Length: 601
View 1 (cartoon, rainbow, N blue to C red):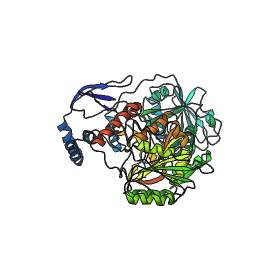
View 2: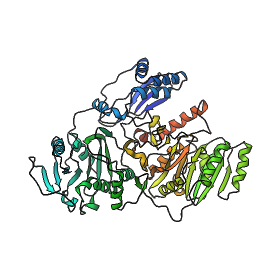
View 3: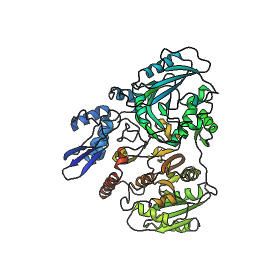
View 4: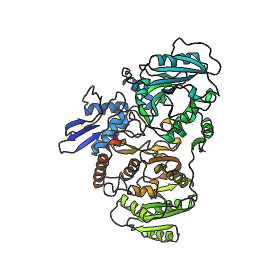
């Protein structure tokens, strides 16, 4: 993290990109008096150079002319943050499609091995001799010398290998995994054609200390796969783990004595077993292999999950984990803060009370001083429904206070916070959220929210995005699959928006609800999710709950005093959650925190 101390005593902080080698370009305040750098042991600063503002504008004009116009507009109107980020997004960010050139500029010599961990590499023979030779050549180039390879063939051994560390053995449906891995060995599975980076096993073996599973990033068929830190639901339903990885016998103890099955299914079976295994997991955030192979078909993964005893549901042909709905279905209290705007409140109440297929709903409206007679008349109509409670809180707007008051007045075992500018699109949205929120290990649950034109508004919050926190892939097409196809299934994120957030009352109360003193308007939902996370609860985002959201339409943009308040709350958020801002575990450190896409920094 880089901190620019200004002459007036204030500071601006910037998260530097991760990876073995990295480059960062930033616009420092003109009154910067001192620059401080916080970095982990082993950090080396290779070079510092100064770019002129005019030079950056010219570069932006050459690369993305419209961005240059936007940058100049933000500069004229005095929005230094947007001016800076617009220039950075044009000059310092690379799309994922530009990965080869981006990676070549950041290449470094292979690292020496520091571990004495023995590694057993298993490679099924698929009949492609050239591909197998490439994989063995990659093994023989490893800086970690303590490895041995078993090549599994469908039939009997055919011939001996020149390298004594490589042996051929018969595979097949009756072969057990325990027969292949020694008591002190870690297992690594490779497919013929996979080529490890020369220091891949060195990094993985060192990372396995105290862990049951360690995995790295990969380039598969030319495309980078930059993975999050351990995300169990995504690993099981989405299969993001891929290769390369090392696992201990303890990680795989549940299947050591089972027949591996057909060689064709070996990788998929191990992938599911690793996702379900017990023990600590570590991610090494660097590309350690070039791998081959098409993604596993959804139908094949669904069948394998069912064979493994995993309950799944298929949505649009995509398998996702199926979590039970408690019986009887718990009462859900939907809390909606609102003020005036008859068009919004009628739509959201109609959606909740008449367009939602959930059997036990309580609606709590917290009115923040409405003056519109039509809204007050509509409230009288709503009061005729025994499921509706209306509270009056005319004090100055404090979203956290309004939410806490609504929750305190509600009775449900599950609480759903909902903005007044939400529209229900599908009747099953609430059930999908309650299924997730009812899991003992889950705290907050967020939904897939779309703008009125169908583009993505919310697919999870990345802490650090836009310097503090932001919505990933905002304004992308609504059917965007996301990197690693993660938007196709429910998965872990660091935070979700309170525009539509479900949580059990017990967990809500356990962290004291929303913090109305530090975060009366902004960052309160992200802070709430992070406090739940600090207590050991996961935050989940699910595409099975799909709604429309006209973002902040009832409040309007933050300008003037509202902008100053936003910045003050942002500074408090950064001070409280600096460690998470430095590294959101569910967002790769090489991905940009400047743009809201999935670009390379």
